[in-house]
Amino acid sequence: MAQQITTKTIRNNKRTLRSRIKSALDVLRDQALSNQDNSYYNNVTIIEGQPLQVSRRFKDYAAEGYAGNVWAYRSARKIVDTASDIEWLVKRNVSGPEGGEQEDVEHTPLNDRWTHPNPSSQNQTQHDFIENILLDLLIGEGHAFIHRAAPLNELTILRPDLVKIIPGPRRSVRGYEYTVDEAKNIIEKYKAEEVLHINLIDPSNEFGGVSPAHAAARSIDLNNHARLWNDAKIQNTTGLSHVFLTGDVPFTENQMAQVKETIDDQYRGPSNAGKMAVVEANSIEPLSNTPKDMDWIGVMELSAIEITVAFGVPYVLLHPEGATYENLDHAKRQLFTETVFPLLDKLKDSFNKWLCPLYGADLELTFDKENVSALQEDVESKAAWVMQLATNRLILVNEAREMLGLETREDCDLWLEPSQLLATDVNAPLQGEVDASAVAAPAVPPLELTPPEPTQVLHMIGEIRKKMTKR
Image (cartoon, rainbow, N blue to C red):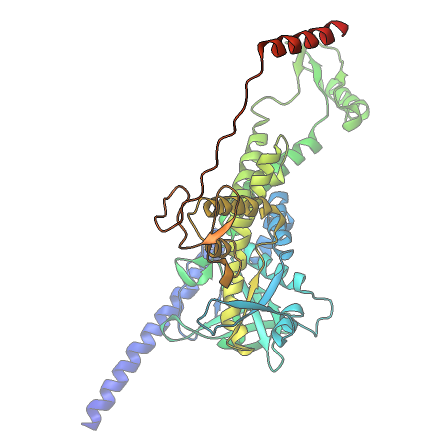
């Protein structure tokens, strides 16, 4: 029996070893293929305990898709600068963890930590902290890693391309490895709970991410290549508008050398642009760009629009030529509601789950949406709409306060009358209803007016005519 168990165990171990070797070879093959074809999407084979590099092209994206492209740079900066100016708040749940009533708190350890994420880094502000996280998400492959150092919970942002995820059983995370010094190959290992991993989810890989720069990579490359092509063409052009050429008789070598020397000395360069070179010839040919040569302008514009679409920034905000006030105003609101707020909501939920419980179960982070100047018009429109509902007896005053984000009051369970905006009791009859129990109001007697005499009317008309004649 012992011999059978030993043989079975050896057989299982061989099978396990064979599968692990096969998986490792698959990883090496995928890495080799991804390095050869320079693909935008890399296949990742997840092996338990095998370090997983998730952001191999971070430097390329940062160099070409951020610093090297004006549209990607301005799109990312527009999002980051807009989001970094929004005020963050710490709130306490007054009615318990499951309650909805909250109050603002200003003096807690959580406030201090969020205001100064890393006291060891004196130059880093809260603005820098949020800006760094958002740039890591927008550039590269959509990852941001934040390390929490005990016992003070100092927060440090880890560079995504230097982080390796250590997968655990059932596609969980066992830990992280961070290369502190690439030259000396110094690596620090962190537990899973010590690192917050925020990513723009990749449906094909639970450890991966897809950033806007990743999605717009082809458009960014196309825009960069078009720009380089045009730059090279400008540098290589003579700057002439026309040149006379010989007809059927070709130039001799001496004539060609003379023409080149004349063009180089007298016509090359931006100061001579538009001049006409005159040589011994009997025909004229234009040297300006043809419509086909100008296709790069269309390519540049189309690729720029695709880049801004990928980042979620309205094109009119980055290229406001010909825009109206209404277009710009709508675009600003769209940037907040469709791009900035979803990103900040992702940060808020992540930190509320990972950081806030260390300071108390009743505390949470949030950001102020109400005081955003670009959305004030929407708030005023909502207030006018709610007021209209209240004055037409469709909602109570307390219901109107709830819709406007205000606290309810005991003395506001009232209707508002539409005519004079007078508060009445909830059980009071509607306007026009007949209350049988009410005492009938005393009737007001009509006024008795005596009509004027005809002679008086004629006298009044005569006086008016005299005044009109004098004028």
